[in-house]
Length: 218
Image 1 (cartoon, one colour):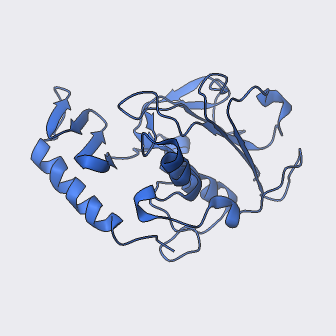
Image 2: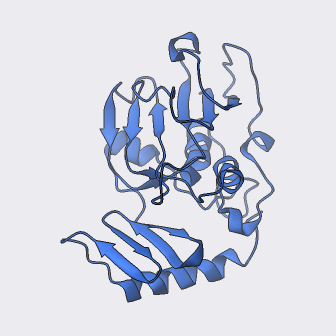
């Protein structure tokens, strides 16, 4: 299966209606360069990862790939027409630039025969999940110690079966985002039904931070 990854600095123009629109997607950082690194490696930028997805999956910029390849389109603004791209390819469109202080960002996946144009998913997901999802679709191994080991989550069960995605996303300075809560500067904003506490999320963040100091996965 061929995959086209569109990563645009600007949100306007991204073809969000072509497939499954993830309305609760987030970047890994407020910094564009850091978020771009995580997006293209599938690892948190704090690790200092080196292996990018195009190092593992061959880049092929032809209109019809047919070999399970990857077409990577990085641009300031996407002004193209998705209908002009390979109709049989999976298209992933997103931005490493967050919308606001909750790191939210657009993310849509078109998977012919699987996703429905104009559909939505409210599960908590990250741009960190793009590499492992593309790897799963193209048959690339991402298990521990594989050449493309990742921190992110393979979203194909979410896409196909409506499975749950992340329980929490972690950020520098002790920040944690869950499906219904946001821990920032030690204070917790949470929905009425949230089981989260500031202490529990702080403990989870400390564990995550210790893991990040171990360096790249490869």
